Image (cartoon, rainbow, N blue to C red):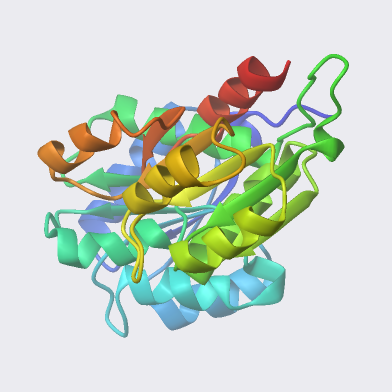
Length: 264
């Protein structure tokens, strides 16, 4: 596979502020990125992306016609763009405002102002997502791994599925809540379960407890992904027996390495 470099990236920067646009563009050019297009509104960004798909969309939260959250969800509903990497840059700190965009599957959420190193790290995360290749698991083939994704957000499930497929994993089942997952786990065998923390009907924590104490596959590896910010609640997760706990957004490289360690 041809290696994609920073200078190869085609970036669409959605930023109504000329000042912010020039600041971000300056950082990108410092990193060697030269293919930078700009749109000032969400509608124009959608139209531009459909005419010529970029490798990454970097958007502000508040646009003239919609929010960055609206934009990423509209992108996820367009077949040719549904897996398009998306990065948010915003001064917004409200969990209520940021959680929906975390659920949509984004490569990074950067604050305003941000440090250049944060932007560069997010760009490398994008490169890793774009050039995912099958995990080398020795005698175990990635195509043989049976994975269950549990998340009440359809866009989040799709993002995780795309990531796993990039690793060469194809035997993927989805559940939209913990109770649905329990039914599947009680009648099917899985090699790995990836679950959200905050879900209706049954939380990720409750699902993990069921798997560990009541299911017929109590030792199955479990990866939990979450936008939860309550440290006391997350501390409880560490005692439920998850193999790894990742914040949303998370880095595909970390998940790839964990799976390699588990099954390689």
